[in-house]
Image 1 (spheres, rainbow, N blue to C red):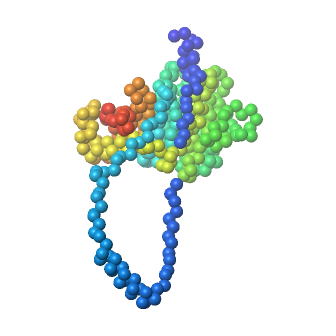
Image 2: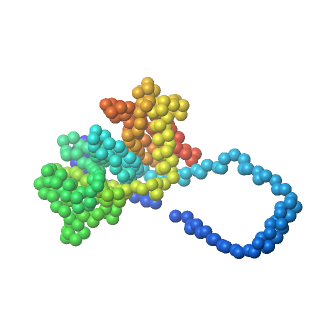
Length: 345
């Protein structure tokens, strides 16, 4: 590979394929009336009513409808046109570190990037990075029970340990040189390790979660890659949304329900639904009695249709390491079908 080609690959090119997608009953009224009747009128009314009831023809019992009501088919997922979709649905405490984050969603290219979730953080990284050059990545972190000002101060202390200069810019900063996404607070921490082509740079945006906390999204790469990986990371940040149960589309809820139903069956030792699909059936004996500790997935458009790769994190006891039940699902005939299941250590 020639030097110019290697450098172009290292900086991630310049691409704008990332897309952003986005998406109560009446009042109950009670009317109360009081009517005063004389005792004689009441007696007359009782006699008339009794005579009417005696002469009224018998009514046939209502015929119940046959069978259960038809099931509501979830609306089909949107075509993703080559893009992937990732949702960190929930996490629990792991090794004393709280991962009880609000759910969020973000668009990224499944073909070019992957999700990496070490303890306490979530990263989006390029699938291809050249050796010998600093790593490029988008780091997503969460500051629980924190105001925006507190989260910015904490992140600034972090960046000051790794970069030569750290500046806070906002919408009033002249020639700020960075974009301020509409879905984030109108400010950005800009950090730099120098002006050489391979010196690391970082830009961090902040999104309040509506639950008393703040997400930070930090895009880092070396200077020469700012127009490649840096631009792509910024586009991803623009698609970041804190999820709420009210705006979950039916197709996505159906996928989550399907995955969790299967996970609970595996953890209960009932493998009838997935027995023929398991890659490592012997490992399921160790999964029985476990409970889920996290759920994440990505969705992408492939030749066979819309596919979902689901990972259910679990462990059998406090001293056991975490493992993952991995499921592959395919949207087919109005529902999610499981095409593969296995345990990953």
